Length: 199
Image (cartoon, rainbow, N blue to C red):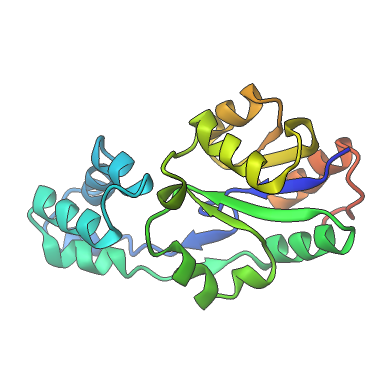
């Protein structure tokens, strides 16, 4: 029986509206900022809380030689998928936990509160506070201990299949997120009483 559904944040619940012309306007190759942002070890440093988001952006700017472009990239607006918040509300109405586990930075708590996600998901687990990032099993172990729920009663979804490995290794039910309809179907397959996605 599933008692808790654990969601990834970015790429599942919220989506960034990146400006496709940003790098070209600043004389950078397409993808240069993302490559700098997600390279090792800087991405591990920020998502495990060893450096702040501000320091992360500073290092990206230094690496690319385009601090102004990185500053603009760091202020990219995002949108929340309200089909996912509706699903979370439905799960909670059935008495289940709807929580988030994100590989985030020190600003996640403020970002989540600013857009009201904390009204739909609770608790919200942030790797920068835990000290371990997905797919490290220790990140998932932290969640299980905090929820006091056995692994086989937790369902975890992430848009990055590689992040599912640590959860599956502990015995969680996992689902590679591709959309809310497929997610609802996977939940029903695990015995969770949720509606089919609206047509």
